[in-house]
Image (cartoon, rainbow, N blue to C red; front, side, top):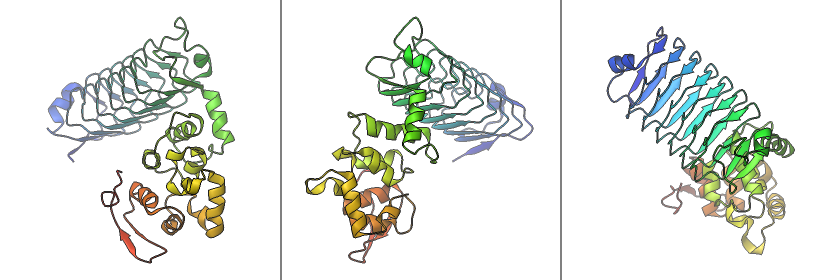
Length: 343
């Protein structure tokens, strides 16, 4: 990876400055606290750029600042940023995740238009406006969370987001989302809309308020529990959000067979609570084992109670490749290919 760190003391980054100073083939840019403004078109068409680290201090991301950065995969917008201008990330087709922090007040028109790899959007409280076509043609976008602070969403903001099936909207906008004279943002009747207050109430009711899960992970659990048509496999569930504790995955999967590991639907039973009680009775530490994904003895707990394939799925996801079978005492040093698991 080729990293270019902008010298501390530079106050704004212009298109000309990037042309004159950024080495060819740069894959990562680190922007220091001294920079206050990333100017219009500054990094436009920097095709090798994969990552941008924006330090606290930047106030504005200018028009088309990262337009057509086709290799750019991730960006974290710090709290100091107030506005993301028109077309800021237009056409950055490899961009998978963007975190919009509390400081941002406005997301400009077409800011993320045609970011076709973008899978989720979470906007923090504080944003007032989402511009027209802001996320239009983001064809991989599956869910969106927009807080009650947002007062307006522009025309066609989510037009042609063909994978979008779940969207959390401010209460007032959710009540009028299908009224084109009030909110013509491109959301269709086959997409599930949830009020922001209802989503927060559900989060509190289910004991998720104080957990260190991202809003994306919590919304994933919401789908897992409430949407009958949402049935990811156990492997997909683990891969989607590996930081979520196994007991929460089991709890919110309910009785959806394909969402559960084999142990919980074998022998003709799909009652998770019964299976959990049975597993705990046979191994009194089992409950502790599944509270998180990083306990040293978790491997023994899972291997005693889940099938080898299910246990291996978990460990491949958690990037732990070596674990010991409690029954045989033999070390298992397998990867996902050996086990026939995609992960």
